[in-house]
Amino acid sequence: MGLDLGKRLRKSSEALMGRLAGIFGDGGIGEDQLAEAEEVLLGSDLGWELTDRILEELPRRVRRTDDSWREVLAGILMENVPVPPPVREDVEKPRITMVIGVNGAGKTTTVARLAARAVGEGSRVLLACADTFRAAAADQLETWGKRLDVPVLVQLHGADAGAVAFDAVTRGVVKGYDEVLIDTAGRLPNKKGLLDELKKIHMVSGKAMPSAPHRVLLVLDGTVGQNAYSQAEQFMTAVPVTGLVVTKLDGTAKGGAVLAMAGKLGIPVEYIGVGEGPEDLVDFDLAAFVRALLSAGVPNRR
Ligand SMILES: Nc1nc2c(ncn2[C@@H]2O[C@H](COP(=O)(O)OP(=O)(O)O)[C@@H](O)[C@H]2O)c(=O)[nH]1
Ligand SMILES: [Mg+2]
Image (cartoon, protein in one colour):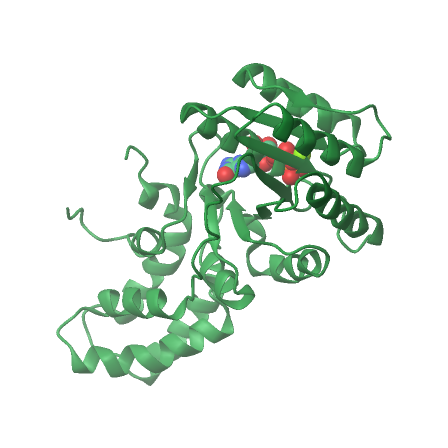
């Protein structure tokens, strides 16, 4: 794999490890160090639950083993972040994916990147713009469609988003597509209108194909950190979210929030965005993520 995750998560990693290394160094872990560490852990957006767990477990385990505090910390992060098993891949075709989230989170970019991947794997992909609210939304998706040579279903401005979704799923079934990716609107989720619209898209997809949608991906802006939690909860009241996509982790020091959020929401992180290029949406791998997050200041070891 060409992508160096440690490099992409450098800001988060340095925020966390740069300071922790200064606090723990090679010495013991006493009360003073733990008090300082608490501030760093919370500042890295690991959240109260995970921070408390680390402060409780770290000194105890470091005393008991020969492992470095860094190795012990990695272990605690891994085992305390419940990553539920990803949703089973449906054998039924097409696979319908609904992509939701607030404006600017990275929905359209995610749709495009998922489409690019699927095309690369030889799948037939259909894109649909169920954001009939902003005229620019359709243009943006159509631009991607042209670039990837993938058809894009759009409706005239003001059309019903549910109708677009229904058409897309129906066409996906009838024309034998492998993947249908539905982009949605993202005006603020406290606007009841958006949540109702998402509910409708979800329901209508199921009318066109009973098992659909097979995935509902909630896209969260990683630079928002743990503050995206309440936003996520609002979306979850409207539709059953099956996976999280956390974007822009290349530009933030709050990458630790991914671990806190996945645990608290109880929803698996499926993908993370770590750059602006088409290849920069990667499968989330907890072990690789933790290793990258804790990599700052460690000499390169293979
Ligand atoms: N640096 C960086 N930028 C990203 C990433 N994902 C999305 N973006 C940028 O975020 C901005 C908003 O993305 P967009 O897909 O239009 O958001 P939408 O409103 O949710 O559809 C765009 O400028 C994207 O290039 C990422 O992983 N890293
Ligand atoms: Mg968009």
